[in-house]
Image (cartoon, rainbow, N blue to C red; front, side, top):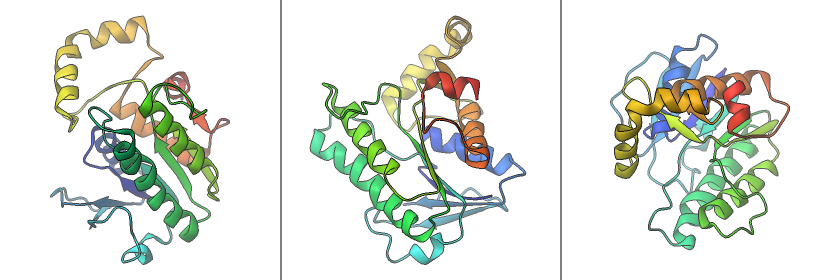
Length: 219
């Protein structure tokens, strides 16, 4: 399986990339980045591209891939709905529409979040925007599209969030993660498990197009 990855420098993307490089069923990973990470691996190609709203200059390099793992996206903290929507809905759809046109047999996996609002009418801004994004992705002519809605994600193997407030939270929560996993095992996942689940769903499919926290935990 050949995979295109967006967001490889974020916490979820780092986890997905690690599992892809370790998985013998993944032949190649094309990571779309704004800046080179310096990571080297026989299965990894980093494609540096600055404009995440226009892929016309590099779209020929997207052909022939089996799946896309879209793990990019900002935190909504301190953002207006217009700004957050541009970096969530507009940016995601720019990539997805290009890929759907070039690779209609592709499986597209979008990492959203627990609490996403599919009605697009709720009171929480980020949840409305994520719901709008999910709904638009599900209408695209991919072979399959799956929306992942993880809850608390424990970073493993030295992976860290790019968001400073999240890094503080994970540092403080690290000692109690074993207790949290014992109390609510189906509501907490790890970067490792999430990455493996994305690969498994891309390979085998899943009965539901939206995977909630409990679906991710038992998959």
